Image (cartoon, rainbow, N blue to C red; front, top):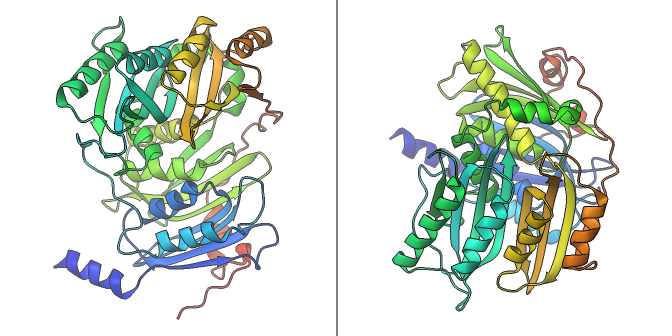
Length: 443
């Protein structure tokens, strides 16, 4: 009865989205009002991430039966959102029925879609792993149409969409799928002990791909410290996130603050992790500068209690640090654009491996017969690649096909101490959202 009543309340009070290009001088303001439910903040942030919007400021309030968020957003060029298709998409997704997006599954499925077969991989990272995976898929006549690969803290995870190279459709034969699974598990396991190497056939589209990668990494406990990674990356200490989780006893919350280098989808990564760890954000704020992002959230566990032990506090801090770092652009960015063909990715990653390049993160896509790929690479020790090696790789692949994207951004300044209660001390006093120059009127 309670569940039916909740559905009735949501039907009677559908989400309301206001997209305003006039109030703020340098950003589009998006306000979302809705009946509150667990996971709604992630639903909203996920939709904004899907259309590649950058959140420069945000105010979050969901304490009670009503949920209200305000976001200042810009596109990837730093401009307001003028594209009517994007505006319509946001409103359609957020003002849709009951749930904005599919909810988290308890387990992955085993049925491929009509278009492609989705493969999820996780295991211990090592040099050349992506090349070996791509070689196996090519030998099994699987064409990679899109994929995303993350590595963090000596662990690797990937979501790969493949088709049969002869039909261009999903692979459905159970025996062939079993062979793919067996051979990929052997590659992931390598010569190491029988440590968690997982390959799963999944139902595409059920869960957001980025969220699945977070879940795969989290399940593989990539947030646990690895000493050798810490020792070999001395140069990265200045850019590491600074996360704290402090008690706010007068309000019965745990206050989580995060200061890190700003980047796209940062808020999504953080909210995704908190939601999957079963924490609820009741109040929060996001503020970004030219290079740095500061976020402050007042959270409780879904059981209504704040963090209650030092072990839980340490785990939350470690998991949020991992969430921020997984998508960080570690290494030199290489962009590839060429006509797609069967085995292309296998050939490219083989050349990387033969030149001792390690792929730290990759985004693979196919659009209109073109392969559009992005790779972040380092040398085998995790350090910057010698420019002479990059020149050699580009000559082998093609100077016009493989481009180096230069990143001239300086590292962010070292984290400074913050005073807990910034949100309560400032934003909560301004219930009219003066920080966003937006006044909410209830109908």
